[in-house]
Length: 216
Image (tube, rainbow, N blue to C red):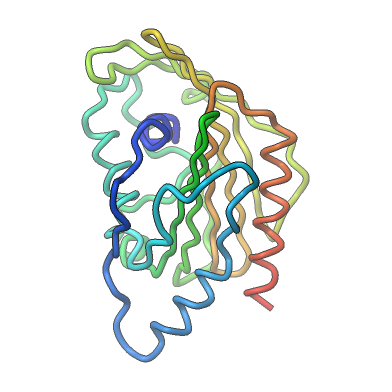
């Protein structure tokens, strides 16, 4: 599921602001402005780790890092690697205009992406067999346990999960949210030692407000 790339994204901070792949044509500026407006402002007590990065979703540095983390990990259940997520291996998703930003603080990180898809699609829920599995991550055996959170409904479709990752000397929790309004999908990962569902729900509310504003 999201946990593999989530842990990777939460423990590394790019040192430079990536530029992604520029969107061609006159529609680019309108798409870019709308996607950028949908991103969260810097949360209190945090800083921008990188971004905003704009471009085709599959070309974004954060997407590439997540895919590479999944490729390097040896999952007990390989089918769970991309479960309940947008699949950047699909051409229409990979080429979709997107914006991403990451925030960091001593207590953890937040990574948010907004993707403009060609149609109103939403990933399927997490399969039951992916609620608990193990993976070899860089030689460390890590166990992942995920539960679905009862988040207040947001947008036209929404889901939230909380994953606990245990392995080696460090444990982490990864809160994940996905919201769809029209053909826009917002995804968010919150990584820390402890992720409180109410805090995750508040971030989702703020993110949905931005989505609602740009999809009017």
